[in-house]
Length: 121
Length: 111
Image 1 (cartoon, one colour):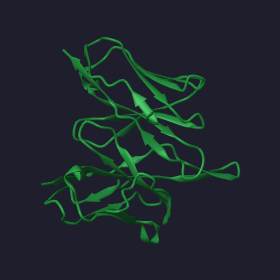
Image 2 (tube, chains in turn blue, yellow):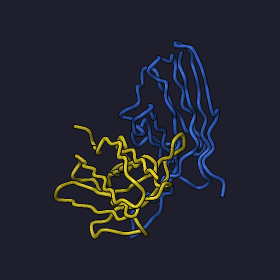
Image 3 (cartoon, one colour):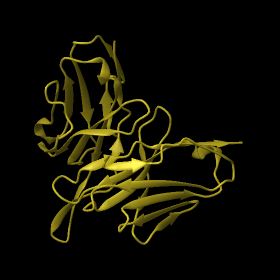
Image 4 (cartoon, one colour):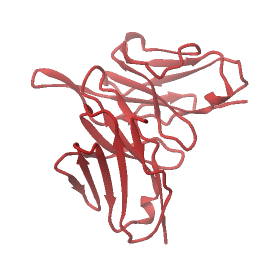
């Protein structure tokens, strides 16, 4: 089974430049997550999609970050303009939605991609 | 207060030791709990789910105390290969099942 694909693997940019990351989740996974992981910290949820709708983006810095998941499959995360503090690993994850006892529930397991390591100089 | 808090670590233990990690969460409505493992420069991977009745997987035992909003992970007979960061994860049961990670606890197992 193919895993979560992310690109690029590494990116180095100067502050105030723009950057975009791409994620292709596991086929059939309705829920897609973008996490930011700063060195030495745990992953911080930026945005969570269910199909092509946003279910949580409360920690997304919307003045500079944007994300979309057109057609409910691939997703892109953009930063414009980048700041030094955006240097981090950006992790994409996906999970299944299953239906049980008449209501939807997410599968417990998140599958992560290898991440994109961003360095802002 | 952070939504999920963990022992900061690092924990340095010899091979064969027993080590325990703790985690607390702030949202009493949280419904699902997990431990993930993250190796250096790798992505997190699910280690085990955590249930109120407690669950065990080989040398690993996880416990949940809903009244105290507390989760634990016990590792017995530590191996060198257990060296990693252990992330406590809490998921809600409403809306989009928001999944929150703790900052992680680093474990170093020495020969």
